[in-house]
Each structure stands twice: as structure tokens, then as C-alpha cells.
Length: 117
Image (tube, rainbow, N blue to C red; front, top):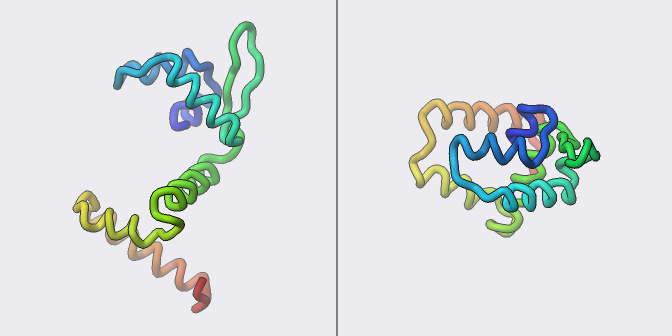
């Protein structure tokens, strides 16, 4: 998805060649993943010559939110708390990351007006 967002539209070959710059991946794997993303509604495709041209179907933020919700549902049974605990215990978060998380939580509390979910 990141490559398609960056390129604005791309064929499977375009994405495959970009990915080869940083890792070994099979062409068929890229094709399968792009087809899955299209079926999930994250990409749209149209015929261009003999290949399909894929482009984002939705804004990046909307797709990432849907993917994160799906991940949390599948891996953590819908609860985000174990994910946050894991991130904190994994010690991969910097002090700046933690400060940003605190700011986001405070802003969320303020915009909720004291409501709880």
C-alpha cells in the first residue's frame, strides 16, 4: 500500500521492482497481495494495455485505520490494551514516541468531553 500511495498508481510489476530494491519477494506474491487488497476495497484497478493499473481506493489514513482495527481484532480479540502493553514492554518506543502517545490520549480525552466508550 505504501508504494501505491507513493506512486499514486502502479502495476504489479512496478510494485515488484520497487520491493526488489530492499528485499527478495516473488512476483506472484506481490500479485496475490495486491489482489487481496483490491478485494478488501483498499485498492482499485483498471485495465491499462495488458496489465492492471492499481490505485488507492481510499485515503491512506482510512485504510491504515481499517487495517489496524482488523489486526487488533484478529490478534488481540478486539482489545487494543494488549497491543499497547506489548509495545511498551518491547522497549521499541522512544521517549518522543511516548510523549506523542500521551498528547494523543489527552487530546482524545478532551475531545470526548469525559465520555467513556
